[in-house]
Image (cartoon, rainbow, N blue to C red):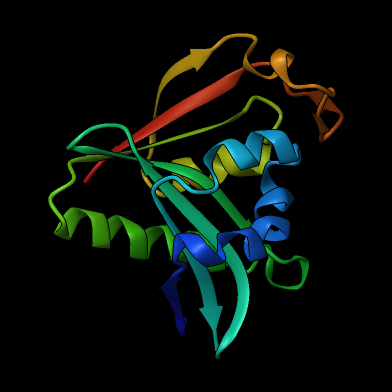
Length: 152
């Protein structure tokens, strides 16, 4: 597919805020984690087409915190491929599982994570009710966070 992940140092992360806000629309929420873990630009033919961020729950678990692809590249498999690259990278670093949470309204994300082999492991009820503004996707209000996990 010709994409690679380019690590973004903490000092440069604020430049990627607009990318991160494509997937998590509340600036206050993104600012809480922008400097945590690993942030990568998703690069295709030397063009940044998105970002993916991972944070570390413990010594064996990595959480996919945010992934966003620009509109013109969305729906073409770039996000799935970036996640696969990261799965391999973190497996090689000795991590044993990857966790990801998404809204009950994020139908496309739910499909993608399952196609990548993630399994449903839990629901955080009312998670998105704490957001300052209601979020709607696909005509559905985001209320609960659905948690998926994949063994590496």
